[in-house]
Image (cartoon, rainbow, N blue to C red):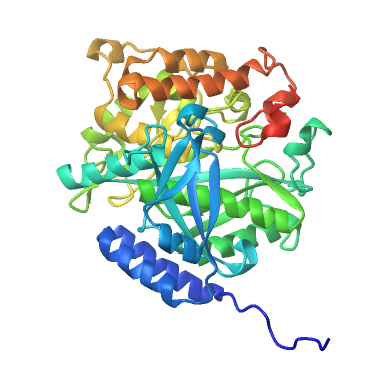
Length: 480
């Protein structure tokens, strides 16, 4: 048989600079709130015409924030729009076996062209909301709830919530080091540098550079990236955006970091406190609202230049801090980070300078006026976090005036069991999220807590990594 000459496959591969331009135009259309019908028509026509695309990666997130992806053959997807289903009983916190069929509704505002060296050639990516079998929004899909609430605020009140996260993580030697923690209970940093300090050619800097290139190509709007305080710790900041856009980018950020690290034979970890004796990782969340293009948190004559609306939003968040703690810190390991010896944001108060405060008022100008919520862990569900913080800032309960005047500094729960109790008993959260979602979420967190020692102690225990919601799988869960 004669060898076949020539290239057998010709799938789409787009240079990074062109990707940045294409994804930037798609993001701007999203921020301009171009009608979904127009975008559906535009993107489906593109999929039909672009022969080099073989598959569409469809993404959704479960109740805990774990990212799920399905690759649909392009031709099948185009024929099956409106009838994309999956087994919800196989997703933690979703349906039971007797009501397992759930549907995916593509969000045509989200259309990403992908770097072929990271995601594979011939693919594009679209986010989806989860629907029940009869087409209603699925209550446990917090992405859908965040999107619906954001649209309602914008259409009815002209309010837009902007969010900018600061997501820290660690880089460890070896692939899947979190899943292998049960076999060798330690993490090995790839760098022994510190804050802003890393040799230009070492593994940490090479990883940061590579991941930042992917972010840039996907139009995140890169701002700065650097090694963090702890050895082998990193942070890559991108610009603020509307809450739903930002939450999608958080999920993609963690995904691309993990894949870039894996390509280099390493693991990008977003555990809040993977190594005792070193700073943990957070996802500081900067929150602001605009109305008619004006930042409503800005007041040139207000205390710390924060408006009365900004101070009231802060007071609402502080009043519900105990209730919100499990949403912001959703794992056993997260409560090791709330350690005052390592700049832990565990004090229920607001401050301009104290980094141990739950809320901080950063230095800002008229455009960047905001609140910084410092107690958010990087393993939190961004859709749930942003939804809860938005609603609480605008609608949350206020403490009686006399109580706020004499309030002493309180502290966040220092153990997940205490946070679960506060979450379950919160009348406010049961009304906001619904009793079913609160019960499901609390049950998931309690199942993980029950598999771990009740006392945290001074050393990280294997179960808090093994049964962590971003780490565990069917094999690890079955080893209990």
